[in-house]
Length: 187
Image 1: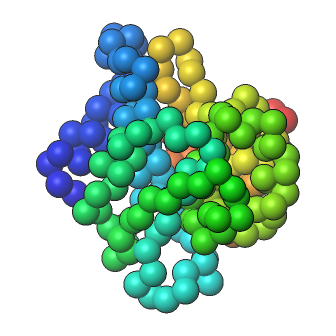
Image 2 (image 1 turned 180 degrees about the horizontal axis):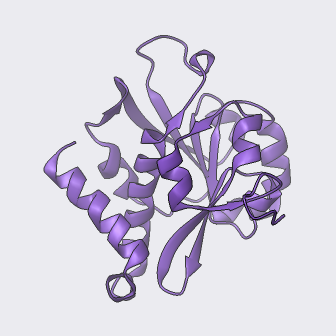
């Protein structure tokens, strides 16, 4: 990992856990932090081999709907690879255009279509991520939420398993587990 990338990772983790730093983040900074989180999620998820067309196929990160990241997501993954797979970012307003994605960020602009989108994804090995209200509890895998001025995330382990994704214990320890497989029994 490059020194710049390491600094971005440290910034994202600090901003999510340090109220003083998080309070200083501007709205655009929020999406820089979320972009780094997406990059980190890719590092802590294992996809089934069948999710890739070849041993050197890239990991595709899709953004569905209005793109809140600007260039931040492209910058977060530029020149990076995970498990010898380069990372590429693709964007579309149509879920059908993003079928080959391994991580799919579903923008708030798609909130009204969430159930349809999740149904279209079915059991495909896609790490679905959104900041839409109740996303993880509705069947998405990872949902960003705000805790005061901090960026946090929920994880639906059952949704990940349904899609054949293995989430590392490090990732699980950082998120709030929700859904039927939650450790607390919360729905």
